[in-house]
Length: 222
Ligand SMILES: Cc1cc2nc3c(=O)[nH]c(=O)nc-3n(C[C@H](O)[C@H](O)[C@H](O)COP(=O)(O)O)c2cc1C
Image 1 (cartoon, protein in one colour):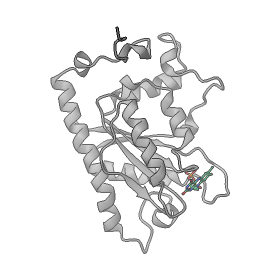
Image 2 (cartoon, rainbow, N blue to C red):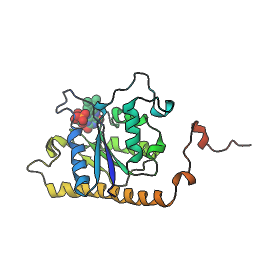
Image 3 (cartoon, helix red, strand yellow):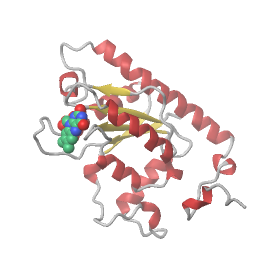
Image 4 (cartoon, rainbow, N blue to C red):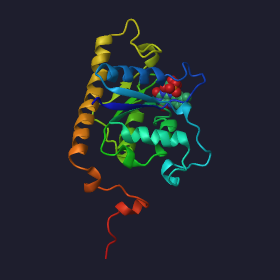
């Protein structure tokens, strides 16, 4: 069976300046196209499609059957995916607060024992590399360990068209190779993790905590 991936888009900025708005959409489309070309099933998760309550209430805080339908639906998609692509702009040298907020709605057990890929971009010259550093910590704690290679796209508006294809004048082959290194790692780990989950139940070896974060604390001394 084909692998399935969720591509999380970290951009909810539908206004400018800075121009262009939602630069991340074309980056997410480029990742999706690369994964689809190798036969994977890909779904985009767009934060603009979710309305969150002003008071933060994550999916796991609702009683069974009482979570908002959209949140419940996304939890199911996260649970059934084989891996994740996290596409983030760099805001003040940090990952997108929109992406962090979206991900914070879900428990790590939904993501656990599956890989992720870090993809950052910017309108300027750094390509979101500083945001990516923090994303590695964030995603590791979330349970979907990031693969070692990362994608950073400086001046993404000059590299990609709105549909995610390479702009004229860019070295399309070099960009395909660059994307392929990270997304190839993601596919390899996703296939290996799927085989591993089928062979041995990861929860039997390392159960998720159920109610209290302290369930994973070191035992009290003395
Ligand atoms: C609040 C804010 C903070 C930003 N901070 C950075 C930054 O730290 N580094 C950077 O390279 N670009 C930064 N930028 C510029 C973004 O790279 C650029 O606006 C990009 O288009 C953002 O992605 P988006 O359109 O998908 O939101 C910032 C933009 C905004 C709106």
